Image (tube, rainbow, N blue to C red; front, side):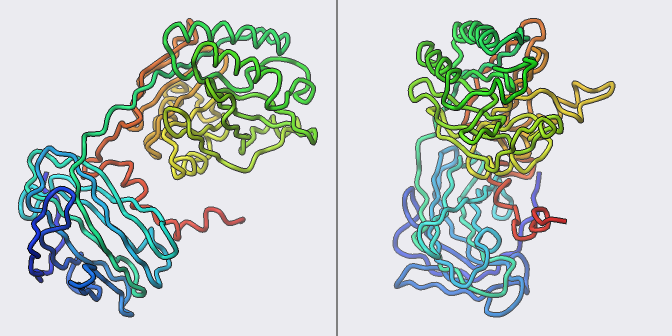
Length: 436
């Protein structure tokens, strides 16, 4: 496919003595703008080796510099890095932008990638990205931009392109286990789930996801009378199991806090460290509100021994903001204990349920591990929306090996993880968090 290429303003700067190579600065550079009339003010300092651009009072500038590495090698993996100093810029996300482009011909892209950034000091940022140069590419270019503003300035420095080893796979075996606990007591439910945990561990599961409020599932007493502190008796049992079987375990349970409040709380238990985090359900189902359950107010992400993970619970899945926040915080997997989804009704109820989970995974480029009560539903969904494992209603069990380094490119190029964040415009979304 041939992509539309933005216009280059043909002002070539002289090459320095050093050539382009891995871990080296660019060999040459030139001015670039999206089209004529949108050029920012630009300058290059040979002494400081910096590339500067500013709006100079003219609105909605969109341009900057193209930095070229002509001898980058096709098929190799590279890490690009550049530093940026911003002055008078309202939004770095909006107005400071970088892309890594691999060219197939002089003006046709083989692939391209957004470059993510992190703040290093006041007004200072590091932009970095790693990608594989396509086998049919002929050169690499870093495009440094000032966009959609008429004020402020950006000073870019120390750009390098370094050859790196291909990233290794980060594979883990994840299991969903569900079923129909007796519901006669917390102890009976715990005994039922312990047996399922042991069976999953025999199948070499490394992380086990249990359903929603499974310790008190179907118990008729009020939640406050059967809820437990966290940590407490039930989590101690599960922590012991995790340590014995060398597995991580996560679930949702009713939590009783020191003020007598009851929460629907997700807990992640590491095999070595015990409880590493808990999450209190933010969006309560109507039945929970009527029964006096208290909502939480945060979406935490935890560093597990495999990578970054977050949890949501059931009705949270109806509201997209929680997934967005977890993904924005770096979550690679979202574990979702769930009783069902109110939208999955009618003749296509199960198909709708699958589609909902796939969309949540795709929209946020995360793995979704979904475990539903009653033993009849549960899925593991890849970040591209593909369902790779489903619970068999006959045994309430599913397991899959997932790779946390999985990426996929959109049809127009660039992996979607970086596009997902590089093209967002948070300043325009204020209305969504305002009270009506």
